[in-house]
Image 1 (cartoon, rainbow, N blue to C red):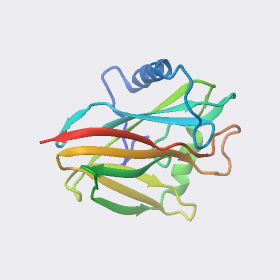
Image 2 (cartoon, rainbow, N blue to C red):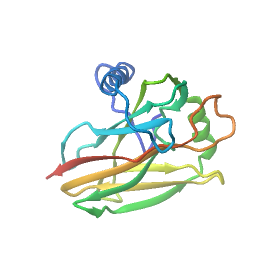
Image 3 (cartoon, rainbow, N blue to C red):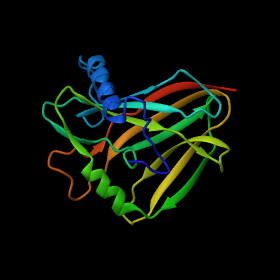
Image 4 (spheres, rainbow, N blue to C red):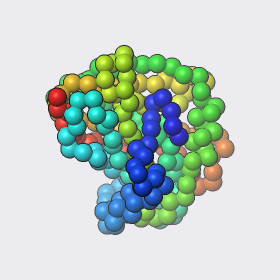
Length: 200
């Protein structure tokens, strides 16, 4: 889904092929077992596509959801409303943020339900979180949407505008929404942390 808050990195090979390649790589990397997650079913991994970014360059974070259970689970590859930023720090300090609200609950929930895909045990589903230019924060910003059943979604933007060492912590969560496909994962994963550096 393309939106104000999130976008997929579209390479010349095309987004479908690109995400297919990511899936193969993730499944190869995570072919062996890992510890139990908070949900006891899904393990979240996160990687920066680059170790060092130039100021003003979009930040891209690859995320992998690995099915640790013994049965297929439904997972959404929609970033909006599922990936939640716990913290973003620069050189150990919380970055500047701004919060907004959008009344698009029904459409986001509909898209989330439609995006659920069956993931077999041991396989991984890739997602891509990318920053966007935010004039109010003065540069690039990573965003996260918190779905609210009252009909108003909170959107928080985290500034990635000043040079330094950044540490991003995030979780994946699907709330217990009515009408989710049978076997869909409902709950919150472990917290994953990824670091990157921004230069001038």
